[in-house]
Length: 146
Image 1 (tube, helix red, strand yellow):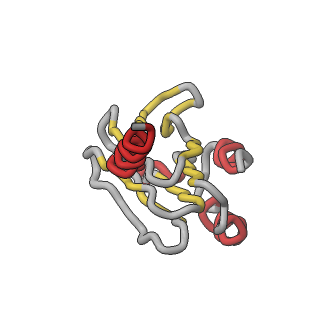
Image 2 (cartoon, rainbow, N blue to C red; image 1 turned 45 degrees about the vertical axis):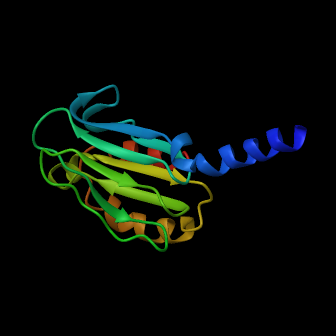
């Protein structure tokens, strides 16, 4: 009897995928939020492998585009004023920005597990930062979370 219960338990565990335990993070793209104007909220996420992130244009005129992705992932971009869901399939860092509002410091960061591409981020970030006219220190603060 105990053997049957044990086997049923194992079968149940096999049937339940990791997706059942994954989280869909919601990132609002806002004209004004807690950190000021033109922001992603939250701007930093510590996610787990298998999670997803949905970018929501809470106000018009926003989209999200990758600047740096983990090895094995392809760059991505949402359409202007449309929701977009990103599946997090590889460990590493996603650095992203809103193309119309990059100069205002509208950037965000997703950390998925280990930060295997952190050295690449440190190498490429100064180029992105040079395009930020307003609030570059806000972008720096987001990266300090790593």
